[in-house]
Amino acid sequence: MRKQDCVFCRIVRGEAPAQIIYQDEQVTAFRDLNPQSPTHVLIVPNRHISGVAEVDQEDAAVLGQLFVVARRVAEQEHVADGFRLVVNNGRPAGQSVFHLHVHLLGGRAMGWPPG
Ligand code: AMP
Image 1 (tube, rainbow, N blue to C red):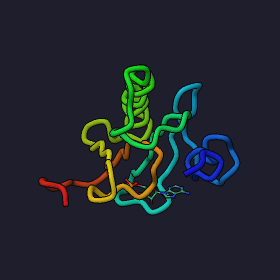
Image 2: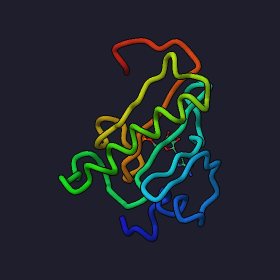
Image 3: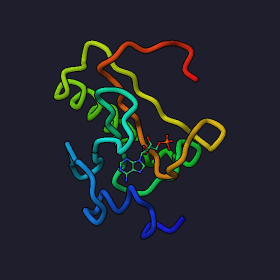
Image 4: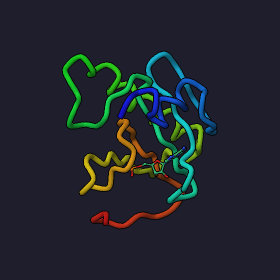
């Protein structure tokens, strides 16, 4: 996957449509196209990282910022009392877009274990 063709890279650059609800120098948060809960936001690093299996030590700061922004989004969306963060890694685990992203799901009760 070339970065030019990556849909999340294109959203970060403003070249593909998305409902962006937060953006800074490191990360972007936008609403999932196919929401699985009343609140379903994707939080992505602006720089292309294909998945958790590819992260390096140098990515530590941006990975931390994903969680800082998750808290901020949860508060903004009024789901801070109960939300779930999901990161699928690899096709067998359900990853379909190979640009690392944190799903923030909230607004409904959730079961465990996840499917
Ligand atoms: P995953 O299966 O963990 O890789 O999650 C990919 C997520 O990206 C899915 O929940 C899709 O609904 C979502 N998605 C794919 N394309 C777009 C897009 N253009 N804008 C917003 N969400 C998208």
